[in-house]
Amino acid sequence: MAATCAALCCAGAPIIVSILAATGLSFLRSDAILLPIIGIALLLALWGFWRSQRVHGSRVPLMLGIAGSLALVAGVVYLHGAVAKLSMGIGTALLLGATVWNARLPRACDVPAPLTRLGA
Image (cartoon, rainbow, N blue to C red; front, side, top):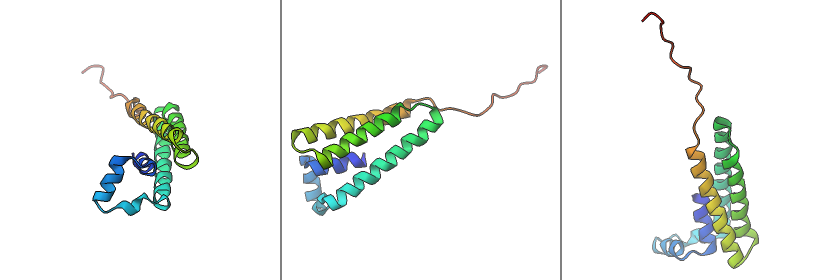
């Protein structure tokens, strides 16, 4: 979510820009601040997807997270205009989908079943 909020700041989303202005935090709209926040947040999210993949065995959330991260970064750094906003929207949707998918996967459990006594 942090990467998405930072990307929306870069895109100049009116609600985020007005909240920053109202709270006196407009200086946070600098690319020198937002780009590292996006990078750190995306790396943290991808690390979490990777760790979860080792637990539940599904690579789908990790792959969606990578695709979403690439789309988000492309929209913020390389693309301009409507294409950039579309890319950021797709990236955000993919990251959100990866998060929901990851949370819904059943967790692997290594706890053995309880032993019962035959005569009891």
